[in-house]
Image 1: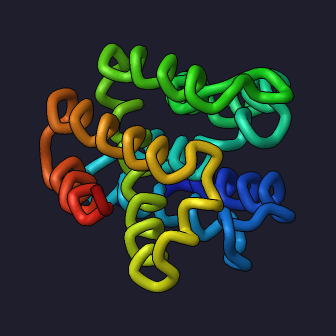
Image 2: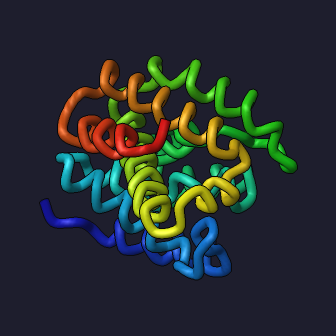
Length: 185
C-alpha cells in the first residue's frame, strides 16, 4: 500500500512537535520512537490512518493537550484524532499521579476499537524492547528512568501484555509477551 501526502505531512508535523524531545534516559531523538510505532503498525497490516496515528499518538499528551488534538483532527481527520485520543492516558498538565493514571488507562483499554489497540500495542512494544535491552546493558539502573520504578514498570507492561493477548492476539502481542517475559521477577 503506497502512502499518501497526508502521511508525509504527519511525519513533518510529528517531527516539529517533538523536535526537542529525547527518549527517556537517552540522547535518542523522540522521533525514533514515533517512526518505530508507525513502522510496526504498517508491518502488522495497519492502515495509513493507523500509521499516521502512530506518528502522532503522543502529540496531544506531550505537546499541548486538547488544542493539539483539535489541530490533528483538522489536519488529519476524525479517525486519526480518535486513535490519538484513545492512546492518551492524561490530558491534564501536570499529569495525575503515575499509578492511578496507568490503572485508569488499563481499565479502558480492552474496550477500545481494534484500530486504536493496534497503535497502542505498537507503542508499547517499542519501549518494552528498549527496557529489555537497557536492562541487559545497565542492569537495575534502568528502572530509575521510570516514574513507576522497577515494580510499577514491570507490573504495567505485564498487565498490558495480558490485555493485548486477549484483545488483539497476533504476532505483535506475542512479541510484547516475549519481551515482557524477559523482564526480571
